[in-house]
Length: 152
Image 1: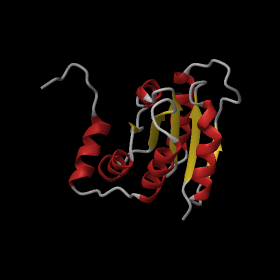
Image 2: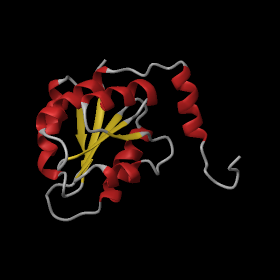
Image 3: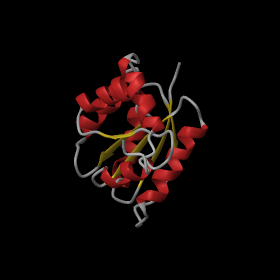
């Protein structure tokens, strides 16, 4: 079964977006572009939120978010309940975030990783399934976290 991806960037991730879309399509997956449509300055939280909400609304789908470093856009996406957006820099982290964390959004920085690494990360993210087991308990704890008054 083909996987569906939503992709969004900010202006600092825009230049690599078409390459990423082609890579995802080459792995037989559907990809839907949520913007932006140019490299004009935009705010990454707006696009992170847009992608995160689509991933939540479309059960079983995934996302890819790109900004200059991947840091800001991943932080913003993780504010949406149910999102596990992982900032990755290599194939190993992309594989393990699917295997152990059941990540549903892959994040990276256009200014940090090159095209070869991006292609390898996407392949690992697409082809790796969640292991479950002891990791499922941990993901359930992540989903239940509300770092409020009860710090015990």
